[in-house]
Length: 292
Length: 309
Image 1 (cartoon, each protein chain N blue to C red):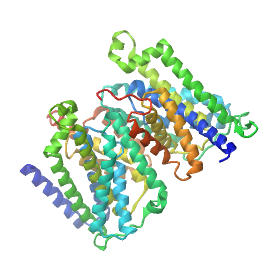
Image 2: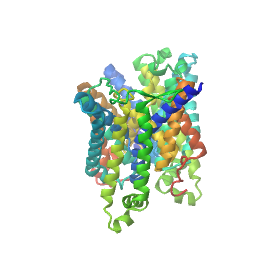
Image 3: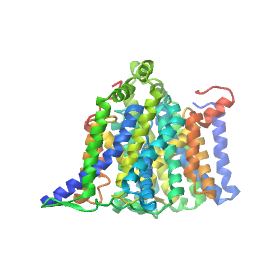
């Protein structure tokens, strides 16, 4: 593999990783605070991509209006779902929450079929981002470059909010002891609603940003949710930087796997995850669960 | 031992089912065959969920391994059924033992995620190992022994196999081993205090569940004359989980009832509308919101006997 090919593949791997991180970080945030594994996260991602298609292609609005619309719509859907239904389930078993989110998957998949049908759609690169940047020995596509900038920005923003602000301290406290936090006068249910809303909006943004890269087809949610699980598990459930590492590992394994071991790139991420879990059952940066 | 009444009731059910072909409807026979297979599948999963309190989200893996292995051994290698079926079941059990070894190191949601991951690996192999499994075209054209190639013959074969499987699971679940599992479900720390090696027991339960899941898969593959990668996908794992929950996890026969109700409902819904996922989603919402102990739990509450046994 020449230097040019290596750089190009590493770069595509990085762009994929950053796109995946944006999606997976939402799933991870929700799990970290609410302890809910949200199977509907992939569906939120798919809705994000489809909404961007409708806004940017059908209505002809600028691409980034589509991205904002996707974030707002998914945030709103998530907020309503959390307030009306999900909040009644926090005290029940994990299984019930898991099944609840699976029910969302089923209902939303039919809703998507009713709204958008089963055709394949594509959203072109936003104007001014369809070209490439010449580095002399390699040409890097602009849109992927843009993803490589946005991903770390979102990571740093999340780190700043969670680790350095008062609101972040409240969120972290909610993961430790929600009863104590409520006793201190914090409106814990609203913290939960906000986290679920923001996490889901991230799925919407991730889907919107993925839309120019991929074909929009029914079933894209099922693939992405598994990939997000892999990333979050590799990194350690609930750990934001873990997800970042997991996304990087995933992006490179998939991209180089496609080149070096074609046909097996779909299986490689699972092998990667198994390798990590056999050595570190709680993921790269995860900590053992309570009681162990 | 089962009580006198339970034995009589089971015998009557099996006998009534055995008389079904006299009614002569091919449709009813096929539908009953499917329900029997799903009943065994759901029951095998409940060894983990209801009895041990471990939620597996990857049970389709063992179903698929059993199904594919039996299909491949019968067709590609030309083994007789009497060898292929046990071999497939043993293989599913072995894979479950290996996977279970890693999974039981974790509990709760981590356990569920790891079972899902392993199941998706199995799906990936079935998808990509085209020469052996047929990839996304599926493995079709299974060579069936002449004796059970007719739908009535296959119905009796399934009835006998499933009845034997259910009887075996009943014995396992009501043995000292099964009661130990219940102790782990109720309070795994205390079970540890009285000397139970909880990890070991959960591992054994995982293997038992995988083995019987494999048996159900083998029956399923032969019934459909083919195995498809969808049978290994996580939505299939979710489907059987829903069957178990719909029936009720805290009773032995709950999953059987759940499997029957859900499968019949799906078959009839599909005749009227393409929107089965919506119907299933609504059923799930009802289970989660108001029926956490399933239909059996509902029946118990209606009769005023409280929730758990």
